[in-house]
Length: 605
Image (cartoon, rainbow, N blue to C red; front, top):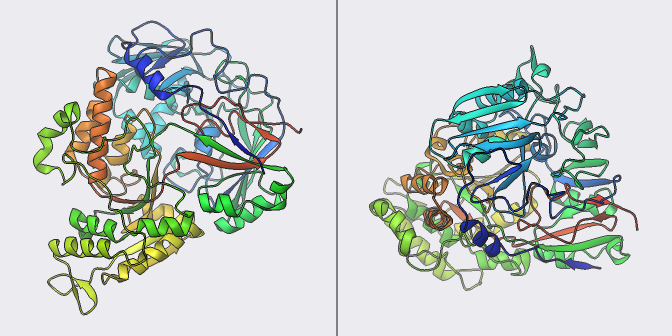
């Protein structure tokens, strides 16, 4: 058994110090753009700092997924799609470097130019950019893609489209976007939309497509074969147009990226042990230590790699839907968190090896600080003081149990909060003053064995306060349909957060998501304070205000008590074939989107 541990290339503190010292970029065509200051890589950069420009081509990576899929169009609301297709099967005007908090470099675009206040942005397409069928990428394709995605695509694209005041062709290969709101991040966000081939969709209903039409894009990979719900095979395009542009050099070199789908986590792990899958992320520390002892590891054919990162923890746990009146009261949500015996569950699930998520941006410089809010953070929050929940300004910490199964202190605290909200134990059941029982459903995806085990322990704890919830497990398609419609009371919830939070925060926590289907605001939160902090971080004049606004947002989210947090993954654990390799220089984001399989290669040794 081999454990490989590499350190990131440089500390985030150094990077933030670098960008804090600089102002915003001003108008002139450039090779890249950063949210603050100049991008770290100059116009003469030859490859991303965490890519191997000499990586050999060939081989395959096979990963296992739990669940299934019924669509290959990741750009629309309809259907259940392998999540990887959003990132592997399309390209955008610009590409993100994951060794910087938020910096973009040209992919389909050769240059980018912005107005002095980033009120507009103009891109010039690379003359050599081609779709996988060999046809050139035109300004018409770009304009069609933006309008179609913004009006018919997934809700994630609608927010940007509503902020574009005009879109115009300014040259044979140039397109200019002018914004109708003040938002400095838009100049970057607008460069990150997938570009599709307009002609492919003539006479077809884009919003209703699924397995019948595979979108044509410019990506290094094309979907070569698939079987609905079973596997997807992405094949490297040998005629890919951009293999030698700096952003792509040394990336996407494996001949095949294959996604295999399994009914549950147990079947997925067995497939990895048998060699059917050759790369497997492990999220359970106890399992990593106790179950990765099969022959392929003993023989050295499978390697265990531990990978650090400096990104926020995000939020992972069980979200309460405040659209249900019983969870609209913060005291009820607080009680539910007290009942959840994390220390006991963590010992049972991971041997207490993984720390708990303490806030949405924990494990990063963006995390709220301990104790009362101070300085700019307090200044930003004070105007909303009357409506902030207890703990936002004063400081909030998750309850900590003694680790015993009974969790007496937590149960007492929960009962106190339930009573304050009008719920008391009557004849062994928690009921309100009208004698109506406290009833709700916990919705899970079939095959999510770890989540099921956690919920089984939680249900036992809930029974101690007179609550017996209904636990329902459904297949992936049904699960997506119900969560898109917010048709659940409680469910598993995971939202990754970056070192450069921006417009996506409105999709996550904005009030529009209370009624608009398909957003990521599963909790149904409606917080003017949160939206004001998002507005501040979007238009912060410098890094100090950006940090303060993000830390203030973290306080609002965490003290809102919308999610029962479980453990965080401040390192990544990947077991993989000895023939799969990655550069020793890790980006600050570590094992994140854009790293595996992008900069991995296959080489037999």
